[in-house]
Amino acid sequence: MWKFLKFLLIFTLFIAAASESAANSWWESASFYQIYPRSFKDSDGDGVGDLNGITEQLSYLKEISITATWLSPIFTSPMADFGYDVANFTEIDPIFGTLEDFEQLLAKAKELGVKIILDFVPNHSSDECEWFIKSAKSDPEYKDFYIWHPGKISENGTRLPPTNWISVFRGSMWTWNDERQAYYLHQFHVKQPDLNYNNPKVREAMKDVLRYWVRKGVAGFRVDAVPHIYEVAADAEGNWPDEPSNPSVADPADYGYLQHIYTTNQPETLDVVYEFRQVLKELDEELGGDEHILMTEAYSPLDVLMQYYGNGSTDGAQIPFNFVLLSNVNKNSNAYDYEQQIHDWLDNMPAGSVANWVLGNHDQSRIGIRLGVDRMDLINVLLKTLPGVSVSYQGEEIGMTDVSISWEETVDPQACQSSIEEFESLSRDPVRTPFQWNDGHKAGFTDSNTTWLPLAEDYKLVNVKRQRGIANSHLNVYKQLQNLRATKTMSDGEAEVKAISENVIGIKRFLSGERTYVALLNLNDDLESINLNDAFGDLTVELEYILVTDKSVRRKGDKIYADSIVMLPKEAVVLGTIV
Ligand code: NOJ
Ligand code: MG
Image (tube, rainbow, N blue to C red; front, top):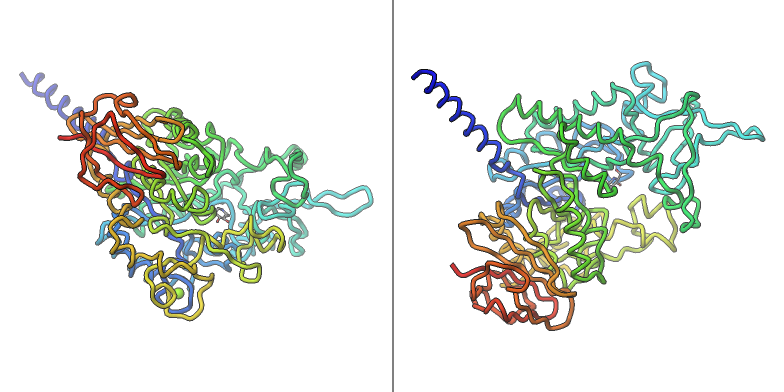
């Protein structure tokens, strides 16, 4: 009898444990939103956005049902790369506010139920970081914190950089330091020296950064520039090989001039990600409560990205950013191209992992420019109806577009280091302009008469306040999509994604016992007649319009036969089965 009871108890515990692990973690169908703090909301009238500005506007994130927001760097920085050059990883830069301001932001976010994710920049620090200053002085504790090399002496006796490697922001990846009498490596700007991950002390110092912010209450990290963390190992003499050139690029200072086989995607990089996750897992265990997450930034080949998820025995990032819809489709892509890109990700993920979809960030042209202003809603419908995690960049929910910025007004180092002829194709300033809140002074971004980047001219038409009042504005389409995402079908259901014709993408979302939804997107200007029964099984004879955009003549609530749907130019709709 006791034996049986014991068995029953163990069995019950086992079931409880199993269903607990099967329960979705908070992030698995979450809507993420990237804030670029300099450009979101300025509270102190200096023309640059700040933490108190974000705190003021957190209720907006709630209004658009955001689960978590990731903030581009807010740490002490000389701003050579607008915060991606960190001088102190555990301090707030005064331009953004104080640690108390950040704590207040966290408290308000908690109250509202919005999670805060910080940007973690492991690859490099600022050259004004104390670690680098000490390293340049050969301080015993810090001398190997960075990557130093005396260079090569050429036949005519002049000193040359150790390799031909080129930095992402143009020119040699090596810069001479007089004090240390050696070159240091910088994959990005000269003011962004690369940390040396072969030094266990560096790894530990950076893990301490993660620990510090998690203990303050952040929900996780977006991890910057992961593929650049390691370079190939040096040979016995401490030298590295040159990289082969790329015949399609003629300019020897351009990053594209070389094939980066020794400076990106080195296998050791994966271990670093796994180690960072391990730190978070230890904290999860210690602190209890919600799981902490890693979102890794890597523009890497698919097979490498899949390994970021983990290697079967070791966990990696929960969200290795998926840029297929950001990098691999363009204005001319047809429905088959989209289908293939989406399936590439879905069909190659390791078992048990969750998909994510990133449509924009502070480094890439905005959706309207990349894929067409008249496809704005259509792309948001795609983002929000695909299974898993969605990641939006600030302003995409109201259809902000790139702002043209003159050479004189350009501040992005990637563009400033090029020329007046070339800067436009390199500048990231156009996607970083002030957020458009309303049609008032400086679009409600600041009380100041100047802003750190010019404001878009279209702000009187494209702003949150105005779009709140227009039934099928981008903002209201976005909000409706967010409501739809809250349904069980969308958060837990399965997905079937297919091209229905060259122009039409269909996404069916279904879950046993729940309503089925089908999103249909007509990419182009042809009228499309669709028999949905040919594309997807198990639909009701009639379907109901759950969501329409301003391209539709149909209204929400209208009914339609599944076998005779007409899609208008650039129309995107969500249909639901009749229950
Ligand atoms: C990627 C960031 O998104 C970009 O803005 C930055 O310039 C580089 N990493 C270097 O940190
Ligand atoms: Mg300010």
